Length: 491
Image (cartoon, rainbow, N blue to C red):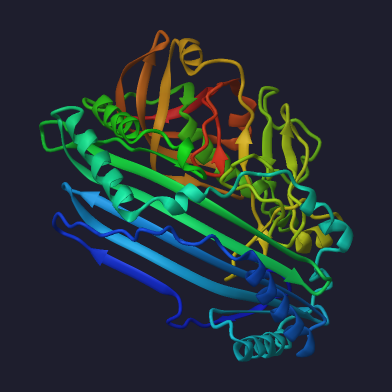
């Protein structure tokens, strides 16, 4: 366990409310007329600061507390009815203490004064069982300066709170209805889901830092199943996620795109094994970027578990590849003014036109490496900080996806993947895949039952085109990519 083997403990009480209902018929749920109140950041800040003060009184050399609260609503529809409905609300606190270089960590959701005293005492007691490590430090005042100067990142939309349960239920039912009506070969779905969430957190530490933030998100997707006629089915899935309601795609457009994808796969077949160009759909390319991220962390480098160790400043990709992690992207699903330790976020260029430019750090791994945090500490109330991206993406190019496809005389367009996987230590890539065979620059027929394989260094070096179709549905995104050659193993 990193950070000097901190000891973690936690407890839960009934104050965390979660309601889950299964609805097997057409069942209307009455919605409250008033929208929930926005989060009270001042109260969260007071609780975090109080926990830190109690930890200091209990004997902590340094202390850091994070208080988080969230409300979430999820509805799933299937077969024209509400299949499940879930509404949850929670508030909890995580307390990290450092006692002579040793870390203790506790969590709790009873935030009464007596409970905070108990958490502080337990955290200090647990730290005394941990292994000291001089890298266990809080970020300095110099490192945390500047977060309050962040521009408005547009992370909170009151309209998300104003969405009634009935509205979200209607969206889920409409997603399925439109998908089923798109083509007679779509006879059922694997469900349609609509979710909304609002959350807030406050961070305080014994250096006097107190910061807070709030955010919202809303998402939807549907999974139509197209019938091959021989008992087999082809799946299509499409959805969108945004921080703001106004930025969502129309329900009908989401459903039709998912249905189109399912129908387009009908008649899929295998192809012979070949070394051919591979065009990666943005969803597949983003998945690969996400798999690669660990290699760009200081933790992996320190452990010699990164295939990028020793390559800083070297060319690792084609010049068309620039990989960015931007914590200040407006309305980004991973955006924040500060990271999980209060260090200001920023735009980090990990790969600059093919050259490995930097690794990312939290405070602990930065201290071990003799450098500074890059503003990439990520954490929730239930864990100590670790390293993670904010909004990770490949910068878009100038070519349309159609122009990239037209470059390929014979190859594979990969738009879905299955099992096997990715080796984070070596960068080896091997996934079962679906997609389309490309002939003379167009999709000739759907393909299934193949495996696409390569190594990340080779794949990065062979990227010959980057599309202009960057689209955000999570905190990791990538445009269409054309890789000059990969192994496609088929029949």
